[in-house]
Image (cartoon, rainbow, N blue to C red; front, side, top):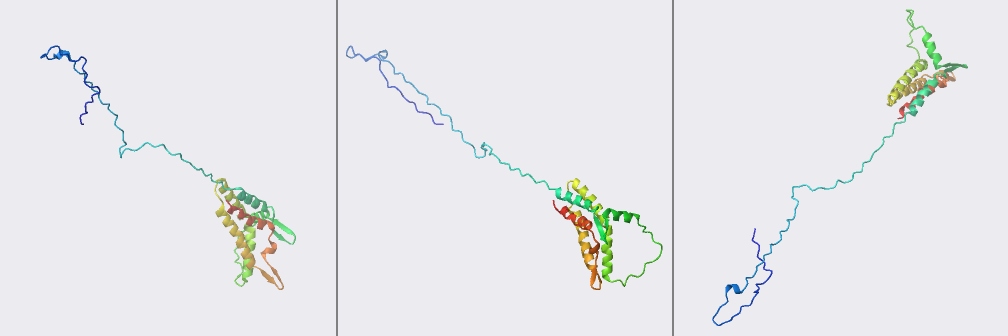
Length: 220
């Protein structure tokens, strides 16, 4: 640190003039006043504060905007409507022939009362039957077993819906049952001369409603 220079604020002043009374006499030291030297200490300035390169600067946090997206809840109304329609279809005709109608519950009761025990006799060889007769028989069997399959599908779909999930997989199986029936019934068309007969002619509206109401299971 370099030494500060001395600053003189007032010149040297003599309070009394030197009086020479006689020749050859010199003034005495007490006849003049010594100048008062005043020193002014320089003011020390506060050093400037600098931010060191490695020192982090304090910054105000920026305002953050948070966007909240609300997920739309899946609409379970359509699958539940499908469940109701399948149950309603069981009260409607599944078979209609010669003015007689058999509902889905009636078919379930007929199957329950049937005796499937075998008496030991082997059936006749049906290898010579035309393919349309075979497919016609399969289509009739699908109509008879339709109410049971539809009830099982409805129960499983209802449990899935109550758990908060989508019964889409069950809807695909249910809908496939109806599509397979349409294919087999079309192949199993039997010709009687100029007329034809198929499973379509005896299938009631209840079966179609119960089979294809499962389309609503595919909606979320």
